[in-house]
Image (tube, rainbow, N blue to C red; front, side, top):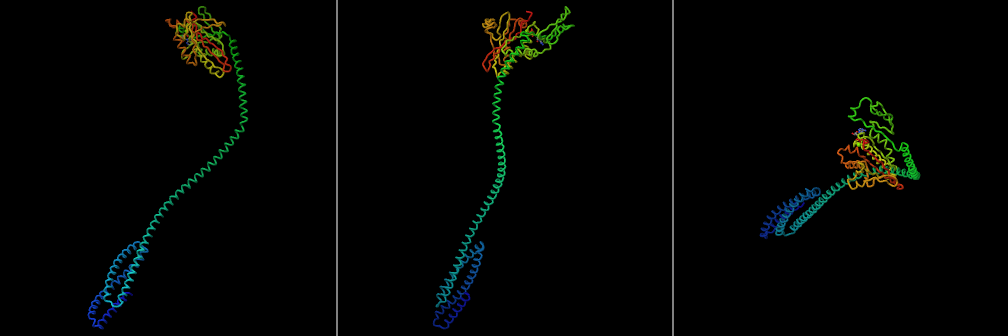
Length: 484
Ligand SMILES: Nc1ncnc2c1ncn2[C@@H]1O[C@H](COP(=O)(O)OP(=O)(O)O)[C@@H](O)[C@H]1O
Ligand SMILES: [Mg+2]
């Protein structure tokens, strides 16, 4: 052991010094110096001993520090601190050693000091080596710490990414499964639709040739029927007008209006008029106490409605559109109901408006075969003068006169002819005519009883097939009172 060895050496040096004291008296001066050195050496030896034990303690510290540095960071720190302390102590010791070396060199004659020096140097070197090892360990530990930190961060990041991608792949998996289910459903549906379409196409293709045949057959049939229809229509026309002719080209109907309040008061006993069947009427002659019967083509009792009268006249409208000329007169005393029958009221119109309405209806019915245009002429004959009720032009009025045509028919050239397309047009035209009636008469009834009112309706038919034209006419005449 270094310490005991050193103490032994020190004792030896002491002994030699004592020997030197005793054996060489001549070296008194040197001895005195040696004594002085001895004292110093003793002191040094003690100091050296102390230093040595200190070094040993430090070596132990270093050993434990080295061990703990390997396992723990905190131990590294503490060993670094103790290393620093050691370094400080070492340098202090080094200084002290140098001092001792110097003193020993002075005192030492032999090689003992050199040995001590060598030993000290060895110790210093060992210390340096330990120091270096320690620093290296500290560096290594620091690097390991840093690597560990980086690795931990990387691990965290990887964990995060892993869990994110795991949940994303979960979601994608779910969506994919759903899509697969839907796709297989759609495929089934598609297959079904395709099969149905193919079946339909096949059935259409199968039925097409017979259908085409049927269509062309129908076309032929329609053409034949159209031809036949024309023939039948012609036949109807002939028969219709033959019927009217057989009924009589001139027919006389009687319409008896209901008695008014004044007449009711006068009536007593026998009824003035009675009716039988639909064509007989009797009149009671109170003076002769005798009832006389009359027969007509038709008799309308007071109960007869406006439309019932019109129904009897309606076939004549058809004749007009077939190109015949028709004339309806209302004849009778003033107050007997002529104007009521021909014109009527707004709420309950007479023959004029009803006949025109029927003409428009039949025009529409025949429009696939013929274009029918309808026009009106309204005149008044007062004091043997013709008046055009559609104009206020005096010069025009003056020229109006009845002319005989070469074919034997009569006409009044220059009359205003107004085309009408619907019932509304007719009503407007009638209002205009009414406004233009003779205003000279102070009493409207007086005037109307003395004048004939004539509404002439003209129809022009143009056949769509061959553009053949024919004209039909109907005169609706409200005559002057028969008493005039
Ligand atoms: N069938 C009838 N039903 C009800 N009232 C009628 C009928 N016929 C005529 N009248 C009424 O008798 C009156 C005289 O009739 P009107 O037509 O003016 O006679 P005329 O024109 O022959 O002079 C009018 O008030 C009219 O409303
Ligand atoms: Mg009248």
